[in-house]
Length: 286
Ligand code: SF4
Ligand code: SF4
Image (cartoon, rainbow, N blue to C red; front, side):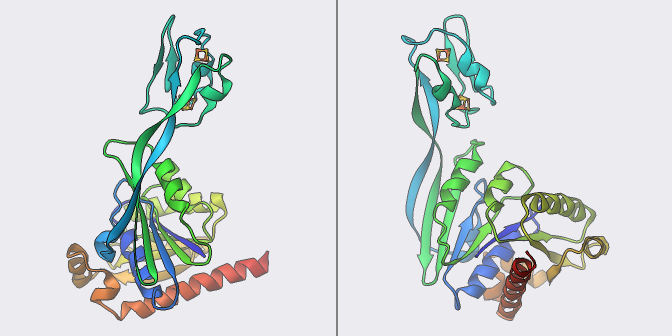
């Protein structure tokens, strides 16, 4: 089972929820936590696992053999990302813009383009008992998150409970991370910003056809509009974590919620059971 933990905006407590769920389940199941928030992977600040494997992630970028090139312009024409430009007697490649889609090399009529790898990030792995962490880390200044996310997701073992910590927002890296999930937990906070970003996140998960539910973090901080939105839209609110100074202090010290306040373990196990029930009910309804 694959459960994504996403949020429309940063700082809502998404990683707190993902790590608490993983740590609660590991006494019962084999758990993989995939940190796909590759620009800022910080789940391991709370999990504190030793990283024992690391490998680079490359994307293929074009290299033009000017001896073969006729400067026909086809490669620039097919590139959707403006990553290659053809001048009168020169072809320019802009590696930072290249998505490594391979269209230019595939369609070059002179077979003048070969590909070379450009490192965009790393995938790191560590484990302890029933819990395995796989985290992607994008190189500093790099924008190509999806290839790193895809590399992280290659480690998914369908026999395990897989929890994906998704980057905040609703852009390409978010879609890349949550697609293929059985369920998506949307973490939000009860504020106008939280509601705005929650509505966008709900649209993305609906578009992808993934069942979802909401976790409200810092409950009590703002107003009742997130609750009302969820009621009106028929979105299940599966867990509320109160605004609590002790929780904030634990987080700031790098201590996970369920380790610092073990009574929350039961809440996360109940949350997991609710998720399983929703998935099962949806399968019966199909
Ligand atoms: S498509 Fe091939 S031959 Fe044409 S400009 Fe590009 S590299 Fe040169
Ligand atoms: S590999 Fe794709 S993105 Fe990169 S230059 Fe070629 S067509 Fe453009």
